[in-house]
Image (cartoon, rainbow, N blue to C red; front, side, top):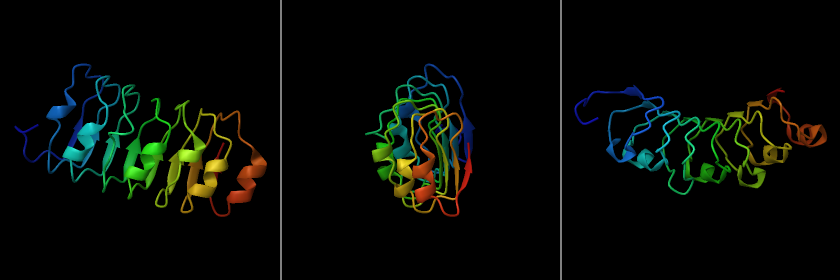
Length: 161
């Protein structure tokens, strides 16, 4: 990426041999590395101005290596994440964790998320008490949803089931 100093957006889908240690860029604002099997997430700390990141189906994501202070949108759908990485993304506004079967509701705590996707997961709705600024939540095909729990925590949230 050093050969493109003004690059602001880069999408590299299914790049099986992508070396994420080469992803270092000060101006990059949007990156897509979906289906890149070598990606763990550690590159995030080397892209300081990143606002949007798509790591859909990156099966080697390591939640302990994922950190970013300014990221606003993150797609980690179809990965093995549990949700505990959220604490390392203080400004996240939108997050898609659909099809993440290891999602743990106790780890889904976040103060700035407004839009959340958790379709095709095993969530019950208990996580809702830990995302106080949520405005929209997509929970399609969640077989474990407990509507009593949802009603308890949702006030002005648009829920799509």
